[in-house]
Length: 182
Image (cartoon, rainbow, N blue to C red; front, side, top):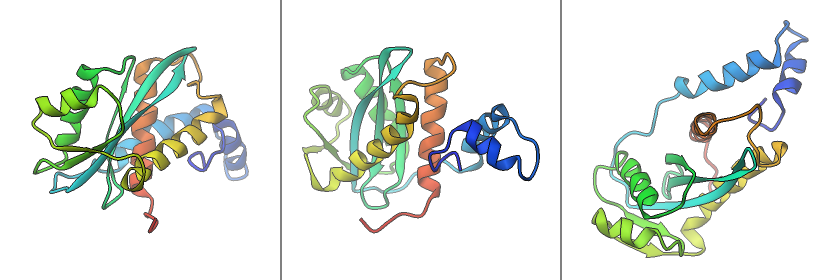
């Protein structure tokens, strides 16, 4: 229920019809849920779309990096950082490569941090604005729609660690749901 857009308090209210649950219990279940699903397995991937977006944490911007296998629509990796630069891009791409047995073709936007990071790792890439990159844009759209409930600010005096936990749980949930054909 929380994943479909309801707040912790609303979910707790719905569950009160069955038993007494506080919104804090729902929060703890949400955090534990990410451990219940397996991480993406290492396999041969041909095309991987990568991108990053900006969210707010305590009034400051943080960046969420994500990679999606364009064939399986599986979220391969996520990273949360305070900056968006070549070093962050390289660290993120290394995390993506942990899910690949061979080096895939990376689909990127015009982010100036990607070319040098990709060259350093010996990866081939292609600049794509639409088409296969739509999957990553759609994932970010879903993430932003979910975080919009708290105005793209993470609640409850958060840290970058709690933002990372939220994003990892969110991508685990996305991988667990059946994929659509689009």
